[in-house]
View 1 (cartoon, one colour):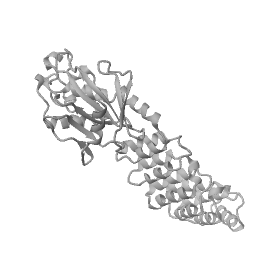
View 2 (cartoon, rainbow, N blue to C red):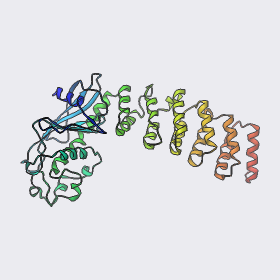
View 3 (cartoon, rainbow, N blue to C red):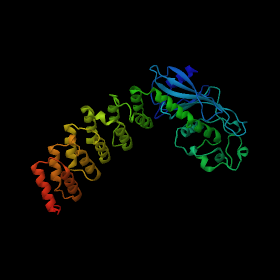
View 4 (cartoon, rainbow, N blue to C red):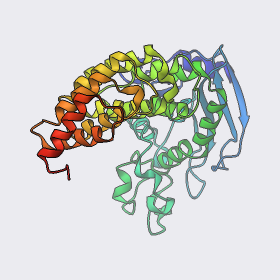
Amino acid sequence: MIELGRLILSGMLFTGFTITAAWLDTGPIRYFNIPTVSLPGEKTVSHILKFDDDDVADTLFEVRSAEGYPVSYFRNIRTSVCFDNKCRLLAIRLYWNITGRYLGYEVPKGEYLSKAEHEPFKAEEYARLHQILSDENSPLRSFTYEDLAPGGNQEKAGVDGVSSATSKDVLSYVVEGAVYTTYKMWHILYGTTQTEVIRLTKTHLNEDLVLKILNSPDRSDKVWALDQVNGRFENASRIPKKIIELVDSRDFHLSEQALNSVHPNAFTSDSLQLLLLAKFKTGNYNLKNSIVTKCRQVSKLNAAFKTALTNELQTSQGTLFVNTLELFKNPGNNNAETTRVIANLMGSENRFIARKSFDFLKKLENKNPRVEELVRQYEAKNGLDN
């Protein structure tokens, strides 16, 4: 059992973004997605747990690397998938990534998946099943057994087949002829086992493992890791640097989540501020706005960042302009050059920019005489000196 789990993980064949095993008539049938981490499995640990699918095995196996990190999880499933319990038993091994997403499946040597009348799956149907199981957001989540063959016609449907009574909506999300098999496997994958996988992985989390997950080629793994970082690992030295690498205009939502996950205290480091500044300079409007929002939480920006934001202020508009002004309200982020630039913006032809600049300077304490004079001139020009 342990050796088999090890061989599966070390013998995967990469094909584009999906790992699949060649079609073997004599050996096990395997279909896999890209793993979260590519470490080879060294040993397998068993966990006896309570699942919501009581008619299948209660053991969850955790494959660990030599370093002690979880590499994957699997369960050996052997269960009936039919209402009348007369169909051929389903014998399959299901795998989860360490972040809880579906990793793949293996049909043991000598076994096969079958459809109505015990007709074996074809190669394309195994691939179709893999595709279906990879979709965590499948509408199968909301279907019930009764939806599969409405009107109490399960017997007419014939073991695991498809009859005229089967909802056409269901057929889009199952392997034709294997409605219950598809449904059963999908719900095992995304039920309490997934929750247990995530719980177990969290018990292993440290800086090294978080970094490995952040390096995953799968976006959802990165999102999962960022969720775990949020509010934790404040003193980790390498995680913030890696997270800033994820900040990119091509994926705004991931970038925003990355920025939100870094504790503001981490940005007291000049090196991290310079990394973030590089992202700011090449970012689009939305990304720049998100970076400014993050920087508002920083107690003090370095001189290079202040200069870049001051220069940006002269050409920015809308939310980014207002957001940057809010940042400059922090005395640690303001300087004489910034104040001079904002004072000049009171003369802008854009009345919104001019008024926001005036409002900022009006509340600013310890203004130099030249700035004080420009504020008075703006008040007189716009009838605000009464």
